Length: 321
Image 1 (cartoon, rainbow, N blue to C red):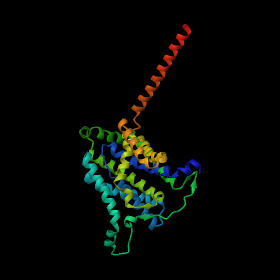
Image 2: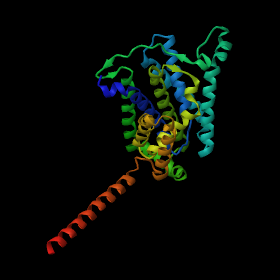
Image 3: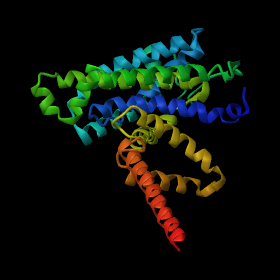
Image 4: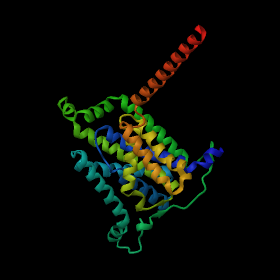
């Protein structure tokens, strides 16, 4: 494995996990829905895959598929209840969902014991969580075997998002975000499309949670607290919410920045927060906003043109004496 990859493999893995999570919230934001439920769906995916890994002989792919199926079923049931909510009411409801999921996994063994009648049954292990046995990953084509599923998953998600934005389905979601009443007047079933976007986002988050289990190894409730929901939202807000590349850039920056600023030690979190705050204030459409970069490019070209004109004038003055 190349030195750069081996020295930064943890950052690469967590960047890929955060990119997948950023894309999971992108699709709901793209539809105009402020959902904070994806940390809860990530927990569902991670716990499902961890239970499958520790209690069966199924491969990771089996746990991955089952995690998405479970999350989709839960998302359909929960989505039917909350998909008509708007803005802050939707955010609060989905935030509450994340807390319910976390508390369920914290105390879920009591429910399991009540159903099975076996007091020795421990599936979720409360606050300690589920620990997956460590197995040194083999290198495949210069990357650890645990990184490849994440890399392929992110590649598929990016292809899906590119296709989505160019498709009729993507244009419908965008129309709902821009003017929900006008979209409804044109015959679009707004509730159905909002539910579909919510379920797709939940499935993506659950897949990211399932694929994170061999890397995180300890699946515990405190991994999916309120801060996780905020981090997922921050990657989309920082990168930009109108194009798929926004969450990708935001997730990479939010993951890499603490590592880049590690030399600042105790002041690292302060500087990290300041950089993010300044970026959001001066780039309200995200760092992927093409209008900002084209404006910056025009100013740079204009500055170079003025400098050339000044140099030409000076050269003429020297020649004329």
